[in-house]
Image (spheres, rainbow, N blue to C red):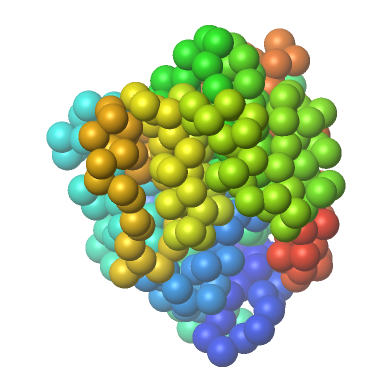
Length: 368
């Protein structure tokens, strides 16, 4: 048996996504069938569509899915039809990093999340011509009405929660917030600089406020996003088109620098600046994705002053642990991620992409 679904497909040499009718297989014993209610549109999805990450095409993308379990395979435990779930990354569950509670650093992270196939190399989708379409992107391919999901990336949530708002928890939100709470361990009374006021950067901002940072400086080129950052708790904002961020941060901190810096732009020069503005003993987290051969620059003498630089992937904590932490904050009104979200019907995915690229939308969420 198969199920006819609607999905957004990225194809070779296509400038835009095509919304198509596809045939989806029944779930295998270790899979779940999920009806998607919402799915975030992430920068990584756009890079995969462009071919700059190792994802084959044609492919259904989407890795910030949220929906309802429709059916479970015979080997699946812990989930049943009717459960509401937020979806995140896939992992092997067996390597040392997975067993240590760090599935984002799974030794099979690239093949399981970016290759968009099952572990045996098969796919679960066919197009109108009977040709295979890659799915299982991050174990979900959630830019669709339904998908086959690996349960290791699923987190059960209260059915009353608004999934259209919470879908980005699966990647963008946990990436920014987890960098602050887990990788940097921002302390109360500290000073934090956030470079980039997109979904990841604004999530880092909200987490810094939760952590009790006394001063939160946000740097971006979009004045509307900087205004939103102020509303969300930034004490200072810097328009990088008007001021030199490093000089402005030194002035704001009386030459000392910041205790913590979060870089979310993917621009190497911004990464260099995030390290440059650290105070002695300061720490910077690099979150942005850039070219595989890109190299940062740092002054070694300045690093000898106790400064540290770390990478951080998808929150530096198991999503099954971090997502509930953030959901509790959301329900308490302390993590208002809805302020940065705009929803679009799945059929309007290309409009959503255009608005995100133009800076009109901070975080687009697709609603099948």
